[in-house]
Length: 286
Image 1 (cartoon, rainbow, N blue to C red):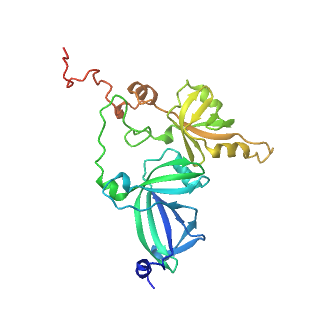
Image 2 (cartoon, rainbow, N blue to C red):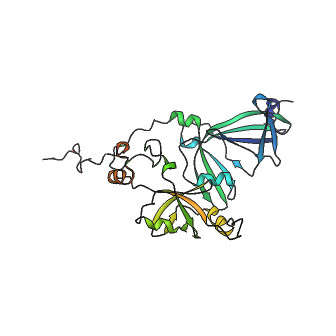
Image 3 (spheres, one colour):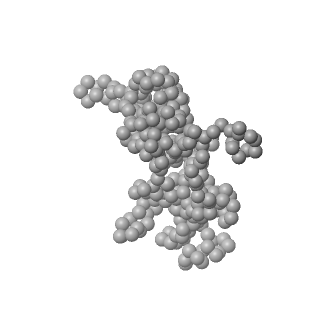
């Protein structure tokens, strides 16, 4: 019995799926099966696929880019899915879905391939939005936008700033939803960290507000509350140690901020001298 013969059968199919995510050199593998599954990889090594409560929608073959997207559903508590609730890095995360049947566990086919483009929370679920690799090929290439504000993402490829050189350490003292208290941030004027990043271990959070010693995040980070509730202790005294987090300053995408705050005006991606009136609008410019 082969995959092709079972796939052609109207009643014998018992499909399962394997989900492989790749980001640079990191690889994560999950399966929809109830138990862990192993397969043979290149070079004779054994590959383990972690059983996870993950599912995806119907795969649609269409010429419309938006309809070619695929949505994966994860439990809200799943640590891998939660990483996409933070700002995504520059490296794309590709997804390959393999399909097999329980009767022939050693034979699978590539069912779908694309990349993760976003995530959102819906009730007790996390929905990962993915686009097909063919949708990417059909899309018109992104071109530079003619705008006053910088078009580059802070610490991204066009910006050129290395976030590793801008991390600043702080002590977390309180967490209330998406509001966190870090005394060290009060050393800078309000708004200094707005648009920046907060890091707690591997978890990242996007900072949307900064006033005094308070930071507001785009979403709550459960990792912060856990670290504060169960801090590490001093091995000698047994006293709880401060919970340290890293914070990187933000940018309002203006040329003056780029020059004064980061000294990065050569990489500024905006056009601040755009005239207020459109010379091609049909009205007199005299």
